Image 1 (cartoon, rainbow, N blue to C red):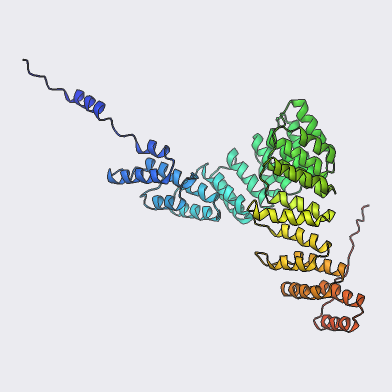
Image 2 (cartoon, rainbow, N blue to C red; image 1 turned 30 degrees about the horizontal axis):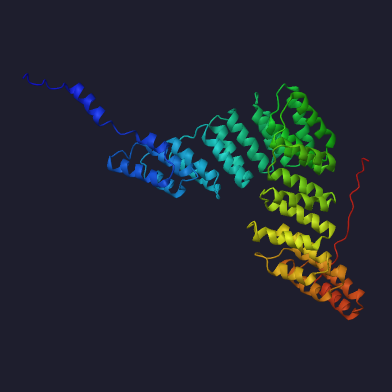
Length: 471
């Protein structure tokens, strides 16, 4: 028998690789992670195989920890802090994560540390920083980031420009937002949309509509987001005619009215009092989300159609659509305007018991007003005492107004004391209480209150008028 010829080193390697294929790259494994448990296993393998300093693989681990819903931001920071020389992708990933966190200002602190270590920011860094500025609405931070954008020559990058326009707009500075917008020679549709949205969000409806017209003249085809922003401006400014123009434009261009645009149209019609048009459009929509229902319910409630708003709320429940806090504000305000006390009570209790929604100050305000109108002042007072936070002057003032309407002095006295704790120099509550004493014939109490006002130098604020001399 002939002796077996030994395999060459090349063939031996190939043969071995067939029997024992090389392990997949850690970066590929990291990209396929679905849980922190899996990620920690990969991390452990990187440590035992001395691959922990592979920055590319480490950056993929960090990306999952920082950005995935199943991730762990604190673990991402531990990975980052144990990396000898973090690359720019790692810095950007953490800045991006912090920008969307509960404390977006931390993104700016990360950037400061990044610059101290002479890491150069890139075009991907600034959109995340500007998102952080938008999320915590800091105009000062917007200006500081803007100076760094100029320093690194990225003022014409379209993604950076879009971020700056949004950040300035959200921070209430539409003048600077427009200046950034005007300085860009070639603008993308998203930049036009962001600027129009910025005007709409800052109640500059005329400017939003003018810019929309300018965009159409320049030959840009608006998308759904642009049209939704314009319709929002029409809703806020009461421009029903212009809203109709947008609807006709959509029909002429064959733009499909989906959930977002349909909701924007319903909101626009409802806010402008065109309830029949809003209802017709609402009924014709094949798909609706909770924002669509809210727009219709709130529109009906505001314009005095409380019964219809209630009926729509019960229909929403029947269709097993989960309401949110805005839904309850709408339906409770409808009950309040129509004096539907029993319905209001029932709906208020549904919030927490059935849907687990913690009532906010707006919901308590509606209920206090509703109970006050119905003469249930003790119940209203107890409701305020049971609130999770301290009552403000607005909600106490609503109860005081109801006390005045029903002549309940005992509760009014307690409410006045609480208001004065919050606003010691509020003369208005003394005036209300003094008038109540006078109506009840308690003149000694009237004189006592006037002495208190004189001693404390409390004077009624004089009224004033504004006359436009150009008209």
